[in-house]
Image 1: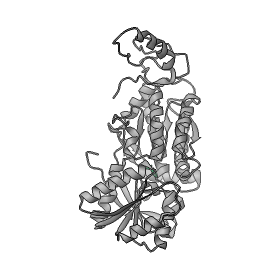
Image 2 (image 1 turned 120 degrees about the horizontal axis):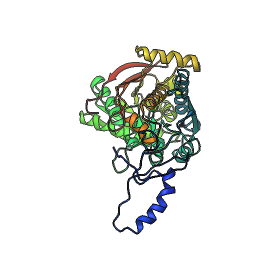
Image 3 (image 1 turned 90 degrees about the horizontal axis):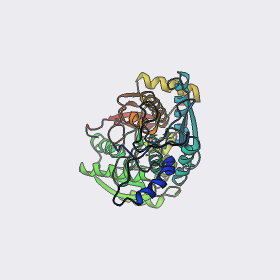
Length: 425
Ligand code: PHE
C-alpha cells in the first residue's frame, strides 16, 4: 500500500505552493512525501518530517475532528433513472446508523449521516462528493450502487484522502486506477463482476445444460459491459456459443429491433446484464415479438418494481443475498428493516447496511479517524459478520463472497443455487 500521497489537496495546497517554489531552486530534487494535511479544521502546521500531532495517530489523508458527532457522507441516486437503487440502499444505511447510535455510537460519539442525491448521473458525482468532503467535513463516504458513478467518485476521495466504501458496485475498475494500481481509499463490501459473470455462466452451462446463449448489453454502463464480457469469457471457455451480442443505451425505450435479431440467432437463453430500469421493458418486448427463451441477468435487476411483471417470471439472476437465508443475522436484519420501513429489504438494503456496520467496526479499531488510519483499519477487516455473509477485505480492496442464483417465481426471488468463489478470487 502506498504510504504517502502527494495529491492530497484539501489542505496541502496551502503548503505545496511555497514548497514547489523552494524546490524549483533545487535542481534534481524530488518532491518529499506528503506532509501533514489538516482537512480544513485547525490550520495545518506541516513539518518537514510529517511529525504526528495527535498521540500516535497518522497525519496522512484527511484530518478528522476528535470530538463531537462523527460526520459520514452518503451519495446515491435518490432521483433519476435508477432511483430504486438509491432508495433501498439509503434505507439500509439509515437503519445501520440508527442501530449504531442506539448502541452508544463509536466510542461514545454518534454518527451523523449527510446524504446527497447525484440524480443517477455520473457527471453529478464529483461535485456531490466534493461537497460532502469540503462542506460537511465527512470522515468517510458510502456509495454508490452503479459502477459508473462509483468510478466517478474514486479519484475525488483518493485526492482528499477520505475512505469510501461502495456497498454494491461490482465493476473491476472501481478499486483500480486507470494505470492498474489499487486505489488507496476505495473499498467495497461485495464481489466483483469477473466472478458474477462466471457464476451465471457456470449456472446456465453446467447446471442448466445450455449451449447457446445470446447477450444483450447496455453499452453506456461500465457494469453492463464488464459483466457481459465476464459471462462471455467463462461461457465460451466451457465450450458454449454466444449466438449474438447486441447492445442498447441507458434511456432507450424500444428494443424490438435488437430483440428480433436475437430471436433470429435462436438462443436457448438471453443474458441481459442491465439495470431494472430497462430490463422490465426488454422482457415485455421480448415476449411481444415471440422471443420466449428464458432471460438471465445480474444484480442490476434487483428492484421491487420489476418483481411482479409477468414477463420476468422464470428468469434467473445472480445476486448478493437471498432473503430465504436461514442465517439468524439475516433474519434479524429482515425483521428490523420491515419494522422500520414497512417493506422487505432487497440485496441493496442489506449491502448498504453491511457497508455502514463495517465502517463503524473499522472506526472502533482505527488509531484515529484521520483518513490514513481509517483506511488502514478498513483494509484490515477480517471475517466481519455481515448480513450478506462474512466479509474479509482482500488486497484488491474487494470482498470475496459467494453469489446466489435466484429465480423469479410468482413475484418472489427464489434461491436456486449458490456459487462459491474460487480460492484465488
Ligand atoms: N453491481 C451493480 C453495479 O455495479 C449495482 C447493483 C448491485 C445493482 C446490487 C443492484 C443490486 O453497477
